[in-house]
Picture 1 (cartoon, rainbow, N blue to C red):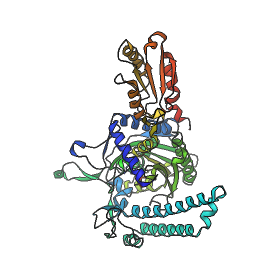
Picture 2 (cartoon, helix red, strand yellow):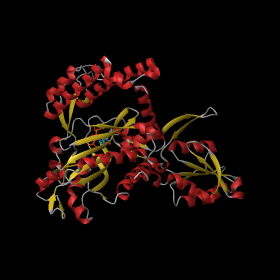
Picture 3 (cartoon, rainbow, N blue to C red):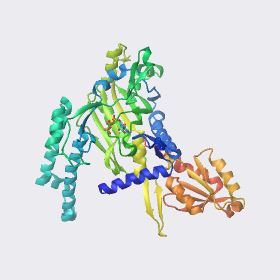
Picture 4 (tube, rainbow, N blue to C red):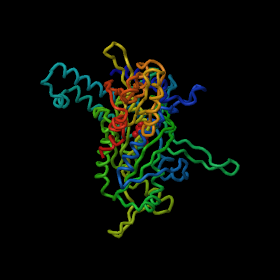
Length: 515
Ligand code: ATP
């Protein structure tokens, strides 16, 4: 897809989300608040289903993982120990002509992406020219222009890493100047210096007169897990390797918040910290990379939609880290992070609090600070990933068009819609009877308005996997028509068979079996 088409797709998804009650801009009646969003009736259902899938895959399916729900406000020393007060900064640069602000690292990465797309174009051209006999690996390693591009990328990455590691903002600026990066808005190279900007929101605890304390809105849920390490370990009688899972809000004062719900200032994370014996962390890091990819693939969105991206530039606390990237409408971007965080957090909290955060191993007769492997996924980004893959405009055989959300049935906001063919002759009453029964087990809708075709379209647009239609014949033979969303195939089945048929494809079990 071209950049323009990508933009159109994201715009279409945004508009679709609004029209069908998935996502609204926050406080729209006051013209909205940038990068804040509200989830509507269908959005709230979908979000809850994603959470359920993640939570069950973590906590229910693993005897050695337990859950936690810690508070958003935490003692301010937490963020000193974690490094967020001193090091949770983004390098920013302003363009003096457009007055737009950018993350310096993102500008450089976008520049690298442009070079990468030149490589892809060369490969594409050669594939066309050489046809079946084309050897891509050999072509990439021998073609002089491609070798040159790869060298360029390596040298840029090395300069950026060195600037980040040394905190050398002047070197960062020089890199942007040397690469002749232009502002995508104004097209100018008139840049300010690069500055650091802390991403935490702060507020005051208590009234100012009583001597206010600055506290922060948590920028990640992980620290709530670390400070509760001993509470959870002792109360649940866990021993490493074991994990603590948590879903909750996080807040970051992102400078460039854009691309719909991809980057927000208030968002939700699903994080699991896995505590292991020091020295075993790489084994578990590989294990969790693999497990998390299986979790994604079980959704059936297509394995080609995901890829791993290893971090070159490791955070101060990590000894290995990668992202699972997803093919969003704007290209492959980070969806989830998997990090080997060493004992950085627990040791830092021990040092600042003076409280021991260790595990006593009775077999070895020694205590140690566990190492941590973390998996961290943004719930809102997962929501966008699902919608990006599910949203489809289809041309039908009769020449009409439909928009359908091909969501995994187990995650769809409603599993079934019950539709009386016409709104009289006892059909609505019979349909109500069926509906009242189904809603005990399934998130279900009842819709008697408009022609049946329009009602099918409405359900397709919100991703309802099954529609049940009640017609005159139903009253006599106790059979209904069941229509499947993706194939649009219709079948007559007994009323007593409906639950079983639905259960086979909408039960969350169908997804959890990867474990
Ligand atoms: P990015 O590089 O995109 O800023 P990050 O590397 O800072 O992300 P982490 O700190 O690893 O992100 O957070 C874990 C996950 O939380 C991310 O993979 C992402 O899914 C989600 N996330 C982070 N920041 C945001 C945000 N501003 N809006 C929505 N989701 C976010």
